[in-house]
Length: 121
Image (cartoon, rainbow, N blue to C red; front, side, top):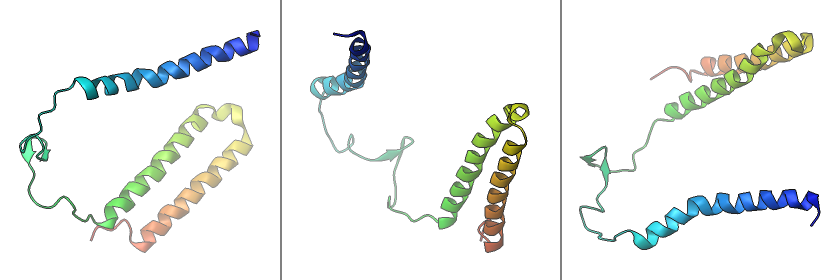
């Protein structure tokens, strides 16, 4: 076996262990865990309180729009923070690129604002 393939042997062993390590407790629990199903054990509960009503309720689409806007600006923060840390080394080109990036997001926010997405009705 060449030293090059010897390095891949360690990666293969690592992958096998990485697959076995989480799966082994699940398989063992399947065989060892006691099975005593009952009406109370199979009942649905939420935070220790018995559930009432239908589980299939409809949420307003505005909740999803707020979540989507949050994700957009959260991702913006993820990109701007490392840029701000390395600002001095990046130069003018990176500054212009970040201005374009922020402008695109600002146009999206302005569009959402004009469409009334941010208004709670």
